[in-house]
Image (tube, rainbow, N blue to C red; front, side, top):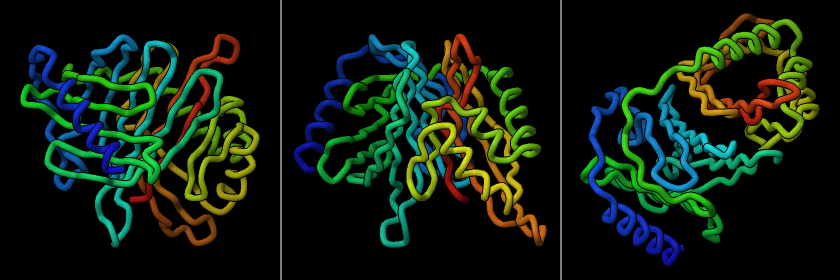
Length: 274
């Protein structure tokens, strides 16, 4: 693991030193106590694969979502591990067209101001990030991603995706788990505490008893779209149906993909309790 981490540090330094200094838009001010406050804003990817990366912090967690120009997507969910190790861990979600989400959990290796690294125990998957003096985010997330990204200023909200979120919410309220089966793509997946539930039928079956026991409310705070992929990050609350008492809440990220035959469907959904 140490050798892999050192290699990642080397790649970050090399990547960060070769490119000319990018423009430095003013990043959005982080909220008080925000997790990894230097990971913020909308960034344009400077590599052949192209794409757009957005960081959104909400209700104790942080989400980094990359929307690629080739229809792929990547989600990093940052959250604290436990009282034994309060450093944030990461769930790395890889989304390739035509495939179910692939999820790997990464443990923290090194967390400093404007520098962070995570890895699996066998270093089969890693994530390394730092912000250089020019304000660019230099990163490596093998396999497949290495970049230097400059802030591009506030991103444009995707009204179409916000409207889809509202329709999905209303249908979920009216029909429960059956709505989730209909809104998810056949290869869609939902990440919960037990792991990834893959396939729209399985997601619907898993959500049916949950929604019979509790009322689930949610709404997005940030939406982005790029071609046929999009995402929403927002907050949710849970209410016990029998007692009417609040039963928790947190944040979530939903990735949508557009199919020529079926339109927009949920490709991935996952969140963290507050």
